[in-house]
Image (tube, rainbow, N blue to C red; front, side, top):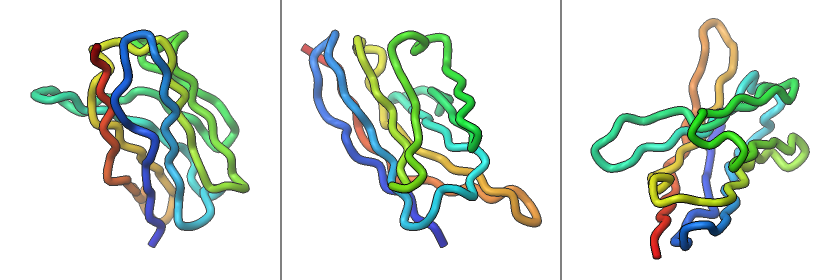
Amino acid sequence: QVQLVESGGGLVQPGGSLRLSCTASGSIASFYVMIWYRQAPGKQREVVASISSAGRTNYADSVKGRFTVSRDNPKNTMYLQMNSLKPEDTAVYYCNAKKRDLAIVDYWGQGTQVTVSS
């Protein structure tokens, strides 16, 4: 059973930057897609960015041009570089990884808090 652990969250001022990491306990090469989600208080969880095993990326409109998702297979880690942060980016950020087996198998991290405030 692969476990995912997020890190890198914290408190940052508006306009600042953070880099989140999602490190797996095993190889991430078998995950056909890895996804960053976020959930703000009182709101539904939403997709922030995704990256396929081929390196294809997608972003929510609200973060395009500010966030960059990447993955480093040898380090078993996915990253989310977040620049020009806004108060509305405040949320718990979760990583998700999907693997095809007999069915699609989902793996989730425990989440890391990002707070953007002056």
